[in-house]
Length: 527
Image (cartoon, rainbow, N blue to C red; front, side):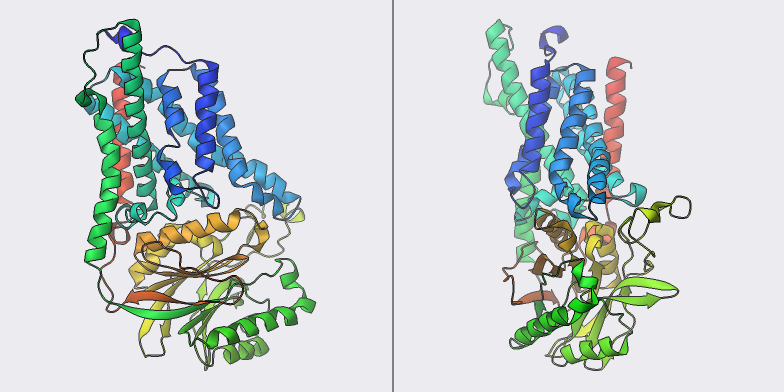
């Protein structure tokens, strides 16, 4: 068989647009709230199939960006609710920026995959690893550059799939995304190989008998190995689980309009709601009551508000999102309150939202005239832990995260390294309407629990509230009255997960694999 006989015929416009469009639709269908985790196992196959046909590069480049942009518009369409009509500008600009990352990966797919058709098994396996590494590097870049926007990595599609989420404890959310890419490419290579044999039969090209040894490609085994690793690690985790101490958590969910929340005439109604919800929760004797981000607008150091909080913490500690003075400004903070009052130190949000909590470049550009932020928040500088005690006298450490911070796993890792037994997320998702943003945001808290091996207690305004187990399982909860749920923390504290100890080590491996793939591809074509 010659290289010319094995090379695929150039794909047409229909193949290009159909393959890329179908991949965009399948990726959309893999994310919450409407998606299913298993859709992510084959979402990239149509694009890989189309790329293997070696379509016209200029057409591929154009179609890849258009479909990537359409995907991100569909995922982030809820942005239009933020500061209307400014939200529409954010929707257009942010989605176009996010589309650049899958676009670059699809260009690499088009460049690398057709060359695999006549390559040997070692080169094909290297190409699969390199493409998976490229995906991981691009997700990392999106979460890092320009303050970062790590929203919806491919790993977020696995909410509800504890087998695959187990991999997060070893390779982190980015490593899970890379594993999903390997599954997709393994299945795609198998399908492409089957089609190649059928084409050979149709053209009477002698490729030899199509037995099982030739049907099953090494790339398929590599993809299936990712799934097998998930099952193996799940069984190992279950057999080695150490005894844990149960903490009874009551996570309060509110439904306050985010703009009305700051109106003085609405303060009494909102305070009454929180007081009633807390009184209902206290009947079930919780060890911890959790309120959302900036639960009420008064400053934390206001004596009247501090007294109100102390009254709500007579039976159990209260962890509350609040606004407090920090230096010459204000911080978006989390505080622990007991019958003795507000405990110090408090935690201040470290990763602020651009154009939401501060205006980048406002010193040089007149952006405050169009962005309704009169004063920037002050960012915290350290992963401050909150010591809490259960009714039985067990003391544990809570690592707080505020809203958008759960999109950045490294912040949770810093809490875990500092000794946290429990992660606490307080959020306000009321800005985004009652659409997909809440479920998408919650998926990030699920990834944190699976990666750190710590339970996550979450309280949100118009956001999911409850407890997520260290395996990433969301415990059932009611919408109105806070249900008391069990968060199992280490007693004594167990060993940290590999990801907590080593971070995103898998990115180094993925980067080396992509670099080697790049060199192989350049040498193969000489350009």
